[in-house]
Length: 290
Image 1: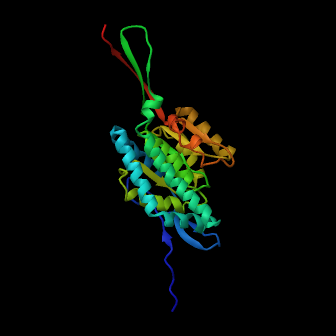
Image 2: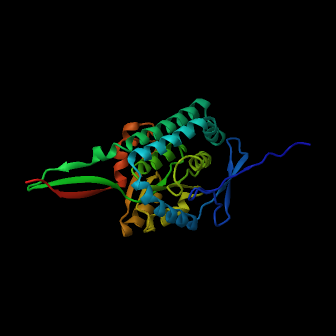
Image 3: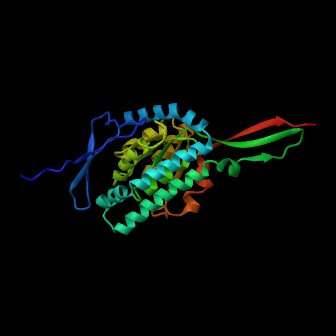
């Protein structure tokens, strides 16, 4: 008698745990040959609210950790990705098809991208902060601080590199993140959930939702406890939904709107100016010796 393979049932990552969507909904995910390979959790507005609540609770402690410690934690996540490299390659190839070499290049670029942001954690303050010249017996310092909770909306492709690029930029600066996975291939995001949950990333600091981003965009834009949005959106209607929604609550928005940006470009996607949109600047005055 032939054996029936077990189809993977995927969940969400919220607060370091793997809940099903509160709605009970799931979406079938087909491989490149049209065969169902997984049931993907379809996140709802309530799931988003739950993720925001835990992210806001976890963010102050994450921001209070030393920059060096945050870098160690992100580096540990890269180590775990390296250990599960073949699984990540298969998660890309099984759904998207394409050559094995292309999937390997994306996974390698994703791991390197996490390492790069790990290296920026204890350098961003020197690059974006400064001592300002003032008239009078004072020192005046500008110091970058994290915004709070950031929602990132991944591109459909590259499904893994786009996700880690958008999520790790605000993470490295001390923000908590809710990452919305690729619509067309959320399988790499599911593998990343398992990596995050078994690494040193504190619960609630990085939450990952799968489903349909169009259903969540309006709620993301209007939610007052979300401090910023970083999104790769090529659809003008989706961009307009975000822009109109944030106009009422003035949250920060950073959009990638190119049809086919080069996500491997470190200067654009992994430098200090990719972190800067998720920082506030605090100015400190201190008397100096007369």
